[in-house]
Length: 322
Image 1 (spheres, rainbow, N blue to C red):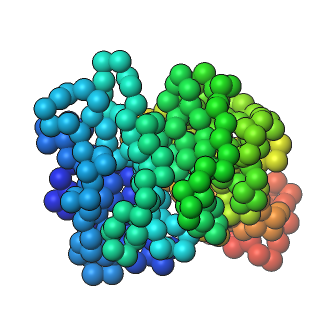
Image 2: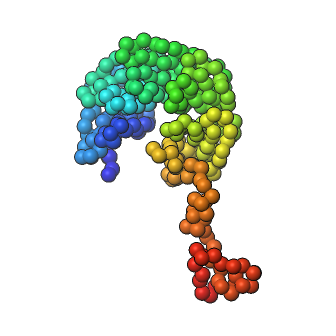
Image 3: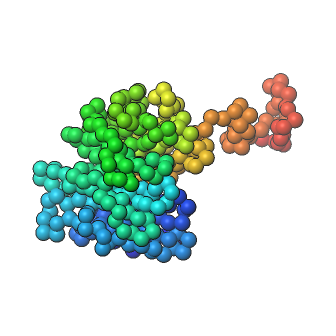
């Protein structure tokens, strides 16, 4: 299936929990129209289900000005599929004043429920598991901050200013316990924090380049991160220990995600490749089986086994000749 005729740059895609719809964020940064759109696509019928162009007055740039234009940037479906959160950020301004918003939409009708926050550059959004609260990141320096909102009442429940990172914060990942949050910045720093107070619990040290994306697995034991330098790193959530480093990509890795079962992870890069990585711990039996399936070298012949004094086991398939 291919979705075509998109009037601008696709900057984010989100999927409904039932897998029937995709939310597509469009921002024509360089095309001259400066249009924004949020399209809900019916994946079963490959047709447009809903387009929110008429309702995007909260995000429309000033058509007479090249300053202060702001665009849709992030989209998240709620876990129960009933609402959508979108965040916008400033595209250009001489003095870099901020004018973005976070808006809550009805996923069925496309109607605006409420403006959750405004006046910032909203680089990341996360729902809590009950779909009742949202963690919102206003990530640009000099005053990046994290806020927790009650989506039913519009009340801000907690907030903290992040002064420990040395540059813009692009990504957050909410731990499944909903008490902790990981923040990641373009200076390569990454911290585990107390969600309510912002206190740093520990750091994740190892990135050489700015961090582009992060994701936590469903049981909250591992986090995977990617960078503008092409790095993909796997970490222990509780200790911050670097578990593995994947080095196949040759350019910026914009997106990393764990599979639903947590056995593998995917990375998508500017180098044109999407790679699936095995990340789950393996038993010795699984490692041996993998080596048999993926080995490069052939089995030894009977003659070679005799030459080197090796006794073949019953599960080794002997080959004739070289």
